Image 1 (tube, one colour):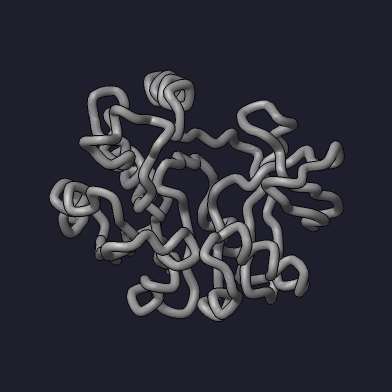
Image 2: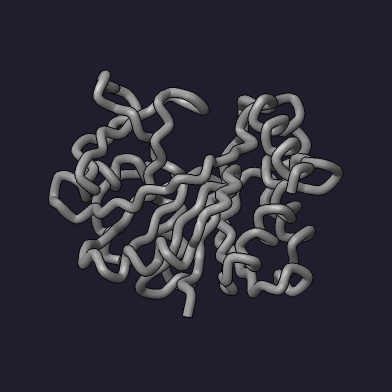
Length: 228
């Protein structure tokens, strides 16, 4: 049985303005369809069935489009940020009653063609509160932020980067709900706290990630989907 997945879809998407002044990033068109349609079909194809959409900015538009998820073969529920943005960590804490004890977390602008079942199995074997997927990026698709060796994350920092950082956070995590007892409004801070306490495992992914956080990212994903 695959775990549920929380999708963090509440951000303001400032890099895509003015496009995202009137629509949320999840509904940005990619090859003629809202991005979230592609994302949800990928999750369904990967064996996932339960999705919790953590929405904020223009979130009702996302809910109006996706509904209960049945058109995508999924069960979709919603966790709304409310009037104040909670940050990625706060959004997950807010959604915990819908997610249960263990779950995936995925960014709302990420298209990740990886083996989700293998990632879940790695988490179930690791005995830690969380697992981060990592990709050997070497500053190619974005700035690398992880020092990874021997199957372990040695350092993770989005701000204070070093020359030893050849990997990047792929964008998919798996968590025990107790991980969110850690302080921090941002998911990156929670990951760092778990790493310091030796409670963060890693799973290396070899498929490239795609994202729609930039116009170049949208172009790259559009080309990939056409090839598929």
